[in-house]
Image (cartoon, rainbow, N blue to C red; front, top):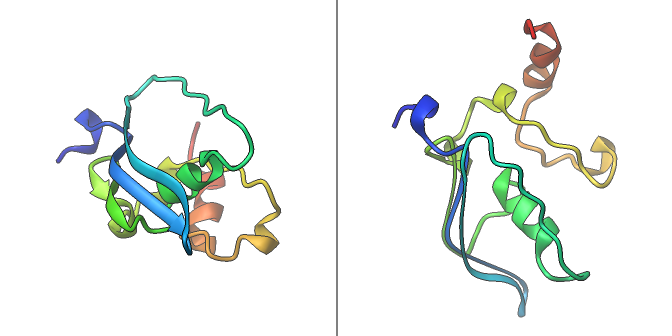
Length: 110
């Protein structure tokens, strides 16, 4: 697939649980280029879990998450992704981008 014509973020039948506690079940959502999306809901409704699945911090037990047409676990173009964690990066050591990827972002012309 060509990243320029592929939806930036796609959830296909995604299910994820923390142990026996379901967080999201059978979620399908396509976020197209230019979309503005807000996830709203009460505490524990799965908003943060969807975000974590979307950047590969969690893996779905069912379904798939695609970034620009690639399974998130195989995605390598992290310079295309913006992510602001709820906690500092010191606590998010599993973020899949490497330090050089993050540093390279600041070197790119805007």
